[in-house]
Structure formats: structure tokens, C-alpha cells
Image 1 (cartoon, helix red, strand yellow):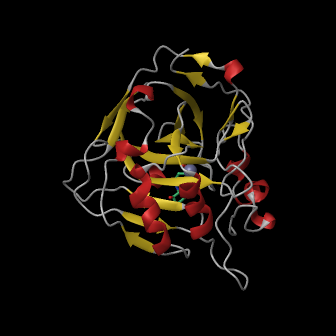
Image 2: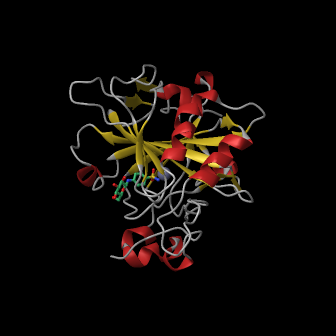
Length: 273
Ligand code: BO1
Ligand code: ZN
């Protein structure tokens, strides 16, 4: 197939065209979705998620990459290192962390992928995990419970969020697509999440990867509570990193989100009333 992109890069290969490249992108269980709070279904089986390795800094260096579509932090530990993983929370097994990345907007537009009651938030973090029973992403993508992605919304706060300093500080080194940088310091993954007391409040539904090939292999967990980040910190994403150069001038990486997809016969569940 050809190349996919976001409308902000080139409307000819934007989200409305993805199904021409990959039929799965036109499927019935696509992500993101709008989370309509009027229609949430409470699920008593959605207990606390168990986070492993989220509260300790990893042994090795973490590598931040501009992959041309987003800013991605690879989380795969060296062999022997303790894995970062999640389980519980109604997940059918244990899931190992692969990578995290972001979706954001532009100075004039919010950029989350999931929406709540039709409202987009400024930015969304995705932490991608693979079911430990599968060995590769390719294998996991063939199963409805192959992957588990945690989604966190951001909201603008007065104060800067220092937990994001290391990632944001790395952006200037990956301003061009394909660039990568080893982060100066590691940090505890848990510090990127909403306040611990709020992690038991989340939405859950069955969906897909939000980029081609749009595999319908994701158990989505979207935390209710947004993470605070200052306007200046958000602006660093919007103004520092670029899409792959196609024309003369490099194009700022903005609005790298897929819009909400039809829920169809699915339900969104909530862990709490
Ligand atoms: S997301 O969390 O639904 N936005 C998401 C989207 C795509 C991926 C993971 C999470 N994975 C990517 C891999 C690429 C691969 C692509 C298509 O899937 O990072 O390496 O090419 O399989
Ligand atoms: Zn994502």
C-alpha cells in the first residue's frame, strides 16, 4: 500500500483515505471513539489495574524517536531487566509495555483522539502493551485481546508539569522525522499518569490501533482524570517536531490525531459510577 498521513500533512492521504490502503481501517471496531457519558455501562469487573515497574526508573537508557507520525518513547527493556507490565483491571492476562507516544493538536485546536461527550482535549498519551502470550506485535495484532493501550488525556494547567521535563527536553533533538535521542535521565513511568488516587476511574472498550493498519486487537483503557500540563509545555510539541519533509519547508507536526470512529454495536464500560 501507499503512505498514510494526517490531514494536517496532506488531506490526500489523511484518515478518510486510510481504508483504501487497509480495509481494516473501515472495520466495525475502530478507534478512537467518542465516550458518551450518558451511555456508559458500569462493569463491576473493572477493578484496579496492577502496575508493575511503573514506580521504578528503568535500568537502561530510554530512546525518544520522531517516527514521522508522533513522538515515541520505546520502553522495551534489555533481556533480564524487569519488565514494565500491567494486569488486573479486567484485562485477560498480563501485558508488557512496548512504547508510549502522543497525539496533539495545534495552537488553534485540541488534539486528543478519544473525545468525551463530544469534546476533544488538548493532547492524549498512549502507553502500548502486548499480551505476554504473544511474542511479536504482528502476532498480537491478530487477536482481539492482543494489545492493551492506556490512554491519558491532558488539560492545560497554570503550573508546568515537571514530570514531563525529560521528554519535552528531548524534543529539540528529534525535530526532524527519523531522528532519535537517548534521554538524559530516566524517570518513573507512573509519574506520567494521572494522580494515583484517580487511576481506578477509567473507561474500557474493545477497539483498534488508531493508525494503519488499524488492527482490531486493542483493549482500550482511557483514564477519566486528565494530566495537567502548561500551555508552554504543550506548545513545545506543536512547535518543535516536524513531519517528514515533502515540500521545500519542513512542516510542523500538528493535529496528529484520528477523529472518532463509529461505535456501532460496541459499548463503553466504566469502572465507577
Ligand atoms: S495507537 O496507540 O492505537 N495510536 C497505536 C498505533 C500504532 C501502533 C501502536 C499503537 N503500532 C505501530 C507500530 C509500527 C507499525 C504500525 C503498524 O503499528 O509502532 O511499528 O508499523 O503495524
Ligand atoms: Zn496512539
